[in-house]
Length: 229
Image (tube, rainbow, N blue to C red; front, side, top):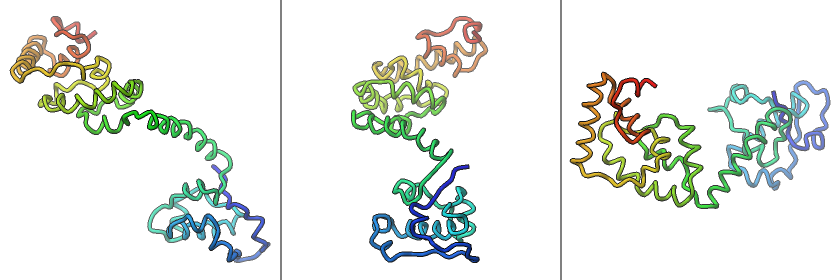
């Protein structure tokens, strides 16, 4: 469990061994950077944190549900803005967790500066949401040029995927650079659909399995063993 302290608590709080505990609110608080930058909800939360800290030598419980309950708040509070501003100082395990999260935040900022298309934009359009983790990894490994080309071509591909069983996994679509494929005419696509259905019936397999094999190998299977391999 992390330790969360109110910054400069020992500097301003001089009441010792009081029951019930008291806190001092200096008038300078109204002109402090914290107070000026917070919205009203964060100002209220700052006061709540100071009241709770008075019971535990300047420490605030790292338990938002408890804080909600004891302070009669409408929902569990978000302490992160108070931590980011420095009003609350985090020690221990939670500090390490926050430090571990920052490299990903920096990577995201770097990707944005390079003009990369966020994976969330691609994922919002792509209709098959299986295997999101490898799909994200593959997407973020593409060049900015390829990401933009894929996004430009994607709507036309989505429009022809009328049967959910025939929609390839995003990883397959990206690995095979399928955004570069020429979009077939409706008749040609229907012919492929029929061939997949016939091959699935012959092999006593699901159409989605035959399609998956086709997406991965570029040709239709001729033996059931190929699907089971």
